[in-house]
Image (tube, rainbow, N blue to C red; front, side, top):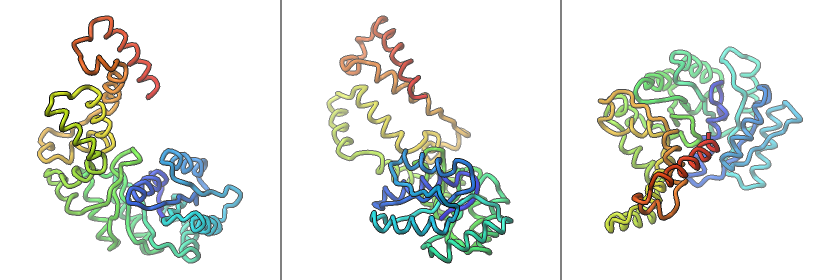
Length: 304
């Protein structure tokens, strides 16, 4: 289960996506019956990830919904069930009691608290209150970057005695990772995080395709189709800004911002070219460039 107000539902989807990559078969459950469109939001996230979502819009009994979801999970052989409960503040006694009822009746293996690392001391206070009232097993920090917000992780860990288990580092549904204290320390000190870069690369890049590309490079047969394939694989690793922050020494250049939309334009240009043009850019005369520019505009318009 995960709780809190900011980014909670999206984080539930991110976690389900991460667990699926690890070989699990997750089920998302809409237990936020109070916030308008909360159920629809989770269904949209599930649809984008192709992960099933259980919802019962005919009742506001979240304990019943959770029990029904558990029954469905057993019948569909889902081995992970993530309950997306209503976001709440630590002073809300009524909704806190609801969480206690879910814990008593469903007996979850883990209770994960989602907190926004940008809220600073508020995040620490919320974590402490939830742990005292409910007993959490771990924390997921959202909007976390290694340059400015490592303090939130240290403080939350200290006041709760519970580990930071995951960190959500961006807006994409793939932007979540297991939290490693040593790697976070390295990022804060500006030493990068090459282990995370390597892990992301291993996940994003196909070994067989990489070997084919190596042979092409040796034979000097690398063309724009190959470049496009590499670009798309790089995008799977996350935003380019987040990748650059993990590379040792890049902090010397300040806070580097890379607009990922620029890479959409590059992709559009290449996709607007013919096979022969991709293989031999010397063919690109004025009329061909004009045609590519027109096609590129249409391509970008579709992906805005």
